[in-house]
Length: 428
Ligand code: ACO
Image (cartoon, rainbow, N blue to C red):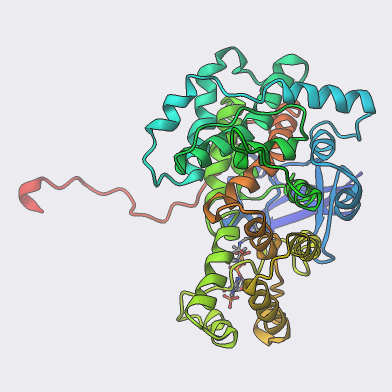
């Protein structure tokens, strides 16, 4: 369905198509604006700009709704597995039993890393940030798969790099962790679930296999489901941007890891735990901290609060908050950071500053407490976010190529010097 809008500037008038999405969202199509008027739109931070039409995920930030391919995140969280949700995000429908077992079998067949990659891990310094290692190693996969540097969206030329990335990202994460603590790599166990195999590669020892509590394995699988996709956020847009030059899928997701790393995006899950630990260890009162977060002259922010799109509760945060209780109870852990988090949330939700700005806890506020209880080191938190997000990145990369989109190339309004004469060195 489409409609028209009219844009007028001085003596120039242009009719724009209104593209109406299946949930009633309206986008004014400005693709012919520059050609017809010589003007562009300006939207730093892209808060008002749609970069594509997409059938993958739907968010209504005002109502706190997230759906993948039409399925509510709450229902997927309650009934699905990460592998099933990954298939759904990638291919648009819930898999049959046969489709799911073939998908899992292809992913399992890619569980190991090429032995040559060992030397790359050993080349990193001891304190190498795991997100830098992950991004580098995903790009290094390119070197071992030069036959897969295509933009194919169907058949083995697409499923092979997809399975490699979704499977090997987990092995890269586990290898990076084990290298950082001076332990040997643990060979994968394809008999385990996707998440069980990851926990095994992280925590098993040769003569002492790690056997997670079912609540722990389920909670981590749920964490991956909740991160599977989130429409055109900073890292997904980066994957699309890089992919739009027809760079390989490996390079595109490697760039996505770089974008995700920042503390304003996926890196916030580490920052939340660092903030809570600081409040706890330095005996800062949550009240003082909230006051600092409100003060524009203070560098403090309430990490894990606020979102560009959600102007009410992030539905993923609600689900994770519930899981934290389940996991802490199963592991018989009492985490003082959780009490601080509850207190901060309660305070923030009754303060005008946060209410007026619609600042609610986002997915990162409770996820760190969950991962910490499972034994994941803080600097690996964002790596786990990246593992969960792979299906979404790959699906967006695929959709962009299915739609044959043009290379992403925003314009700018130049505000620098106009033409001036070069001044010889002696006269400066
Ligand atoms: N603590 C205190 N004040 C905040 C916070 C916060 N966490 N977040 C936003 N604000 C304030 C801003 O200072 C601004 O106030 P002003 O209107 O008086 O200037 C107002 O709320 C609007 O915030 P913006 O920064 O304009 O919102 P934007 O959409 O650009 O940024 C972001 C969103 C980056 C998530 C921001 O809320 C933030 O930095 N949050 C903390 C980091 C975080 O948790 N990131 C994870 C997001 S979820 C994800 O990416 C997986």
